[in-house]
Image 1 (cartoon, chains in turn red, cyan):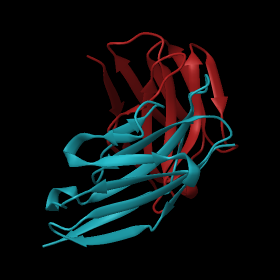
Image 2: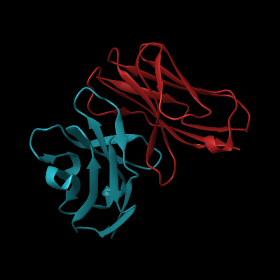
Image 3: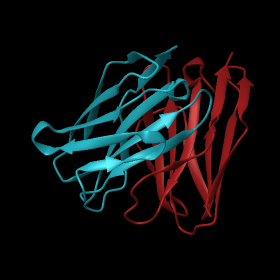
Length: 113
Length: 114
Protein backbone atom coordinates (compact mmCIF):
# COMPACT_ATOMS: atom_id res chain seq x y z
CA UNK A 1 0.00 0.00 0.00
CA UNK A 2 1.04 3.58 -0.51
CA UNK A 3 2.25 5.78 2.32
CA UNK A 4 3.41 9.37 2.52
CA UNK A 5 5.88 10.67 5.04
CA UNK A 6 6.35 14.30 5.89
CA UNK A 7 8.79 15.77 8.38
CA UNK A 8 9.35 17.44 10.71
CA UNK A 9 5.95 17.57 12.38
CA UNK A 10 6.63 20.92 14.03
CA UNK A 11 9.28 23.54 13.45
CA UNK A 12 10.06 26.90 15.01
CA UNK A 13 12.44 29.03 13.01
CA UNK A 14 13.68 32.63 13.34
CA UNK A 15 12.99 35.21 10.68
CA UNK A 16 15.67 35.16 8.00
CA UNK A 17 16.67 31.54 8.57
CA UNK A 18 16.50 28.89 5.81
CA UNK A 19 13.83 26.21 5.53
CA UNK A 20 13.75 22.67 4.24
CA UNK A 21 10.70 20.44 4.54
CA UNK A 22 10.78 16.94 3.12
CA UNK A 23 8.13 14.63 1.82
CA UNK A 24 8.52 11.10 0.50
CA UNK A 25 6.01 8.68 -0.96
CA UNK A 26 6.26 4.89 -0.83
CA UNK A 27 4.43 2.21 -2.72
CA UNK A 28 3.82 4.04 -5.99
CA UNK A 29 5.89 5.33 -8.88
CA UNK A 30 5.78 8.60 -10.79
CA UNK A 31 3.14 10.23 -8.60
CA UNK A 32 1.92 13.80 -8.93
CA UNK A 33 3.23 15.64 -5.88
CA UNK A 34 1.88 18.77 -4.20
CA UNK A 35 2.71 21.26 -1.49
CA UNK A 36 -0.20 23.07 0.16
CA UNK A 37 -0.22 25.70 2.88
CA UNK A 38 -3.08 26.02 5.28
CA UNK A 39 -3.68 29.28 7.12
CA UNK A 40 -6.44 29.63 9.71
CA UNK A 41 -9.80 30.27 8.05
CA UNK A 42 -8.37 30.22 4.54
CA UNK A 43 -8.54 26.60 3.55
CA UNK A 44 -5.72 25.06 1.56
CA UNK A 45 -3.62 27.07 -0.84
CA UNK A 46 -1.77 25.13 -3.53
CA UNK A 47 1.85 26.28 -3.56
CA UNK A 48 3.62 23.90 -5.94
CA UNK A 49 2.93 20.78 -7.91
CA UNK A 50 5.13 18.37 -9.81
CA UNK A 51 4.35 15.78 -12.47
CA UNK A 52 7.86 14.34 -12.66
CA UNK A 53 11.48 14.62 -11.56
CA UNK A 54 12.74 18.16 -11.93
CA UNK A 55 9.33 19.43 -13.11
CA UNK A 56 7.95 22.03 -10.74
CA UNK A 57 5.03 24.39 -11.27
CA UNK A 58 4.45 27.31 -8.96
CA UNK A 59 0.95 28.47 -8.26
CA UNK A 60 1.71 31.65 -6.34
CA UNK A 61 4.71 33.98 -6.29
CA UNK A 62 6.32 33.88 -2.90
CA UNK A 63 9.33 33.39 -0.74
CA UNK A 64 9.33 29.62 -1.18
CA UNK A 65 10.65 27.15 -3.74
CA UNK A 66 10.22 23.44 -4.36
CA UNK A 67 12.37 20.72 -5.81
CA UNK A 68 11.90 17.09 -6.83
CA UNK A 69 15.33 15.46 -6.90
CA UNK A 70 13.93 11.93 -6.99
CA UNK A 71 10.73 10.38 -8.25
CA UNK A 72 9.11 10.09 -4.83
CA UNK A 73 10.77 12.97 -2.99
CA UNK A 74 9.45 16.50 -2.82
CA UNK A 75 11.20 19.29 -0.92
CA UNK A 76 9.92 22.71 0.08
CA UNK A 77 12.59 25.33 0.73
CA UNK A 78 13.23 28.92 1.56
CA UNK A 79 16.48 30.87 1.74
CA UNK A 80 15.13 33.42 4.22
CA UNK A 81 11.92 32.90 6.13
CA UNK A 82 9.40 35.67 6.70
CA UNK A 83 6.88 35.93 9.51
CA UNK A 84 4.14 35.46 6.92
CA UNK A 85 5.54 32.02 6.07
CA UNK A 86 4.10 30.63 9.30
CA UNK A 87 1.39 28.05 8.75
CA UNK A 88 0.56 24.41 8.39
CA UNK A 89 2.24 22.84 5.36
CA UNK A 90 0.83 19.73 3.77
CA UNK A 91 2.41 17.45 1.21
CA UNK A 92 0.14 15.31 -0.95
CA UNK A 93 0.29 12.91 -3.89
CA UNK A 94 -2.09 11.61 -6.51
CA UNK A 95 -1.80 9.08 -9.29
CA UNK A 96 -0.31 10.15 -12.60
CA UNK A 97 -1.44 11.38 -15.06
CA UNK A 98 -5.17 11.68 -14.33
CA UNK A 99 -5.14 11.58 -10.58
CA UNK A 100 -8.41 11.85 -8.80
CA UNK A 101 -8.19 12.22 -5.04
CA UNK A 102 -5.09 13.45 -3.28
CA UNK A 103 -3.52 11.61 -0.35
CA UNK A 104 -2.07 13.80 2.36
CA UNK A 105 0.82 13.62 4.77
CA UNK A 106 0.39 14.53 8.42
CA UNK A 107 1.59 18.08 7.91
CA UNK A 108 4.28 20.37 9.33
CA UNK A 109 3.39 23.18 11.69
CA UNK A 110 5.87 25.99 10.94
CA UNK A 111 6.13 28.96 13.26
CA UNK A 112 8.44 31.77 12.23
CA UNK A 113 9.45 33.95 15.17
CA UNK B 1 -11.42 28.38 -13.75
CA UNK B 2 -12.57 26.13 -10.97
CA UNK B 3 -13.64 27.31 -7.55
CA UNK B 4 -15.39 26.02 -4.47
CA UNK B 5 -17.54 27.90 -1.99
CA UNK B 6 -18.39 26.43 1.38
CA UNK B 7 -21.28 28.19 3.04
CA UNK B 8 -20.64 28.69 6.74
CA UNK B 9 -17.20 28.62 8.30
CA UNK B 10 -18.69 27.10 11.47
CA UNK B 11 -21.64 24.76 11.93
CA UNK B 12 -22.89 23.56 15.29
CA UNK B 13 -25.28 20.63 15.77
CA UNK B 14 -26.45 18.54 18.69
CA UNK B 15 -25.42 14.93 19.02
CA UNK B 16 -27.91 12.81 17.09
CA UNK B 17 -29.04 15.67 14.86
CA UNK B 18 -28.72 15.94 11.10
CA UNK B 19 -25.42 17.23 9.76
CA UNK B 20 -25.57 19.38 6.60
CA UNK B 21 -22.44 21.03 5.24
CA UNK B 22 -22.93 23.07 2.09
CA UNK B 23 -20.67 23.24 -0.93
CA UNK B 24 -21.13 24.93 -4.29
CA UNK B 25 -18.64 24.61 -7.10
CA UNK B 26 -17.77 26.33 -10.32
CA UNK B 27 -16.17 24.45 -13.17
CA UNK B 28 -16.12 24.91 -16.93
CA UNK B 29 -15.63 21.19 -17.47
CA UNK B 30 -17.20 18.13 -15.83
CA UNK B 31 -15.79 18.03 -12.32
CA UNK B 32 -14.51 15.54 -9.88
CA UNK B 33 -15.76 16.54 -6.42
CA UNK B 34 -14.48 15.54 -3.02
CA UNK B 35 -15.12 15.95 0.67
CA UNK B 36 -12.19 15.65 3.06
CA UNK B 37 -12.09 15.70 6.85
CA UNK B 38 -9.26 17.09 8.97
CA UNK B 39 -8.75 16.47 12.67
CA UNK B 40 -6.55 18.90 14.65
CA UNK B 41 -2.93 18.99 13.57
CA UNK B 42 -3.37 16.18 11.09
CA UNK B 43 -3.50 15.82 7.34
CA UNK B 44 -6.69 15.50 5.32
CA UNK B 45 -8.56 12.24 4.94
CA UNK B 46 -10.87 11.53 2.04
CA UNK B 47 -14.52 11.07 3.06
CA UNK B 48 -16.01 10.53 -0.36
CA UNK B 49 -15.68 11.47 -4.02
CA UNK B 50 -17.89 12.03 -7.04
CA UNK B 51 -16.45 11.00 -10.39
CA UNK B 52 -19.47 11.16 -12.73
CA UNK B 53 -21.01 7.83 -11.75
CA UNK B 54 -23.92 7.81 -9.27
CA UNK B 55 -25.02 11.26 -8.17
CA UNK B 56 -25.54 10.11 -4.57
CA UNK B 57 -22.19 9.16 -3.14
CA UNK B 58 -21.72 7.28 0.09
CA UNK B 59 -18.55 7.70 2.07
CA UNK B 60 -16.93 6.63 5.28
CA UNK B 61 -18.28 7.23 8.80
CA UNK B 62 -21.91 7.39 7.60
CA UNK B 63 -21.49 10.50 5.44
CA UNK B 64 -22.95 10.94 2.00
CA UNK B 65 -23.18 13.70 -0.59
CA UNK B 66 -25.40 14.38 -3.58
CA UNK B 67 -24.16 15.91 -6.82
CA UNK B 68 -26.73 18.32 -8.26
CA UNK B 69 -25.57 19.72 -11.56
CA UNK B 70 -28.48 22.14 -11.90
CA UNK B 71 -27.59 23.70 -8.55
CA UNK B 72 -23.81 23.22 -8.93
CA UNK B 73 -23.88 21.81 -5.43
CA UNK B 74 -22.30 18.91 -3.58
CA UNK B 75 -23.63 19.13 -0.03
CA UNK B 76 -22.42 16.72 2.64
CA UNK B 77 -24.90 15.10 5.02
CA UNK B 78 -25.05 12.63 7.87
CA UNK B 79 -28.37 11.60 9.45
CA UNK B 80 -27.14 11.53 13.04
CA UNK B 81 -24.12 13.43 14.36
CA UNK B 82 -21.67 11.80 16.70
CA UNK B 83 -19.23 13.55 18.98
CA UNK B 84 -16.36 12.07 16.98
CA UNK B 85 -17.57 13.94 13.88
CA UNK B 86 -16.28 17.22 15.30
CA UNK B 87 -13.58 18.28 12.85
CA UNK B 88 -12.97 20.56 9.88
CA UNK B 89 -14.45 19.56 6.54
CA UNK B 90 -13.22 20.62 3.13
CA UNK B 91 -15.00 20.46 -0.18
CA UNK B 92 -12.75 20.24 -3.24
CA UNK B 93 -12.98 20.15 -7.04
CA UNK B 94 -10.69 19.01 -9.80
CA UNK B 95 -11.04 18.61 -13.54
CA UNK B 96 -11.82 15.18 -14.93
CA UNK B 97 -10.59 15.96 -18.42
CA UNK B 98 -6.92 15.39 -17.77
CA UNK B 99 -6.36 18.03 -15.13
CA UNK B 100 -5.24 16.92 -11.75
CA UNK B 101 -4.97 20.02 -9.60
CA UNK B 102 -7.44 20.01 -6.73
CA UNK B 103 -8.92 23.29 -5.56
CA UNK B 104 -10.16 23.40 -1.96
CA UNK B 105 -12.83 25.41 -0.26
CA UNK B 106 -12.10 27.46 2.86
CA UNK B 107 -13.41 24.71 5.12
CA UNK B 108 -16.27 24.35 7.58
CA UNK B 109 -15.61 23.54 11.20
CA UNK B 110 -18.24 21.23 12.64
CA UNK B 111 -19.01 21.40 16.36
CA UNK B 112 -21.10 18.66 17.98
CA UNK B 113 -22.83 19.45 21.27
CA UNK B 114 -23.66 16.78 23.81
